[in-house]
Image (cartoon, rainbow, N blue to C red; front, side, top):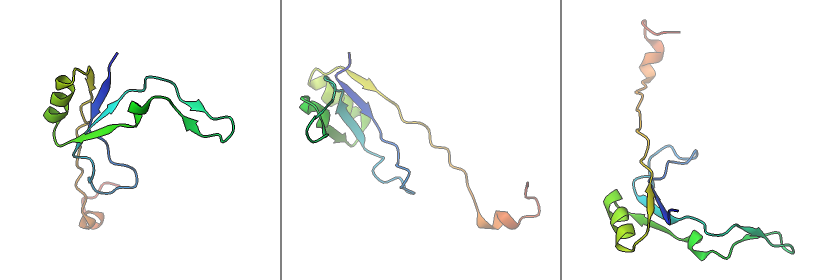
Length: 98
C-alpha cells in the first residue's frame, strides 16, 4: 500500500490560466474511512494525515522528500497539454471549414 501520492494538480474549471498548476503536491492516502456525526451531520475522520498536503517546486524534490522519510509513493505524471491556436481572424477566412 502506498503512503503518499505525488502529482501535479490540473487547473480547475473556473481558471483560464495555469496558475497553481506548476507545483507538485504530496498528499497522504486516507488510512481510515470518514464518518458522519449523528448530531450535526458533519463528516469527520480520526486520520489527521489526510489533511496534510505538501507543495514542492519540482517532482525531484517531492520524490526526494518521500524517499528521505521512508514513505512509499505513487507518482502520477501530468497529462501533456495540447495547445490549439485560435485567431479571431480565422472566423472570416475564405478557407474556413464549416
